[in-house]
Image (cartoon, rainbow, N blue to C red):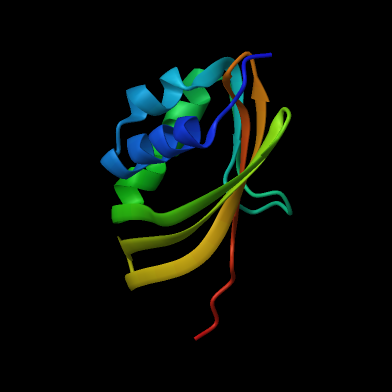
Length: 123
């Protein structure tokens, strides 16, 4: 297994902050999985494979204007990792600021699974 580093996760996050879907997907496996925090089911919306993941990413960028994941901190243990962040965006109902994290599974030096979680804001 190729070692995943904090620099790799920083570059992955930078691609998200640039809204660069091609760069994001270049860091993911062909059979990647993206579990979005939003969705009807208890696990959120799950996208599988690069083309479906592309659709999910582009949907986020179309709904959340100026979305950014700020102040990332990473934890890596073998083929698993976590990045904590604070997301900011202009959403359909106004400004959003919320803490969350991504739980990763890595394979062959890339992201195989990105499972996203957000705090639920009620105010």
